[in-house]
Length: 316
Image 1 (cartoon, helix red, strand yellow):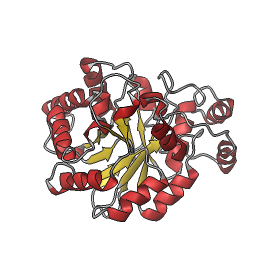
Image 2: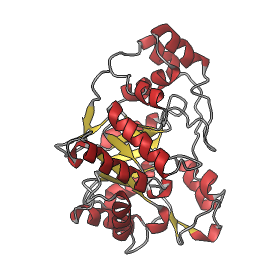
Image 3: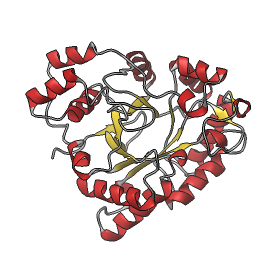
Image 4: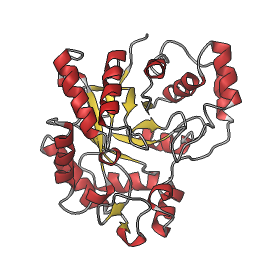
């Protein structure tokens, strides 16, 4: 297996591995299954792990990290890159730092490497079921939430901060008030949702993009098999002796983007890492550029089709 490359984020000396293991499962996989999958991923070579308060996987990831250190699978905490996310219910005044500390308690870590705002929206209460009542959904006060994020950096709770599911307009709002600019914008991106405009904007602003759902989130309530079942990608894969998933992941990587890809299957976990010692041809890239574009993940699918939510979705 080729070594996993890393990317240096703007203004950073240390680097982030360009492929990470996602830990979101719907329905939830459970603590033991998630912990076992993370340990297998570490054995396979993964060093970047993506979680979130909303996923319910922070505790399992934390236990897996502790076990990996105990077993000597990694030498130190600093060998790993851990990303987690601020949930929308904790984005009000005075809530961000306590929320970060709560995630650290779940993870049993002193710091995370990246802390992201999960969605550009606020919920006024903690909710455990979706969709949520419209009156709980509010616009995000960018100044309030970003000051809270910056305080997490200043307190040493996180090394870096960023956002997720942010449009160019939302990013502009953050950049206009930020003392510490966002290092990353984690968004849906794959051959069927290529995000060219957003990628160009983020490149100009020095914001790195991490792609989630790079394989279309098949077997989830929001995803489908439009990538893994696509004939164009399958034909390219067959001609190269690769899997369709590997072709899709390689395409994402060749766009200068890092990847958060979730698989708890040991074999597919390893296959997802085998994308760094070969390239797509210009002809292949041209075929992929012509694929029809369809957004898979919407906030309305999670929170409900409320006017503010639909407005946010339309901007992404």
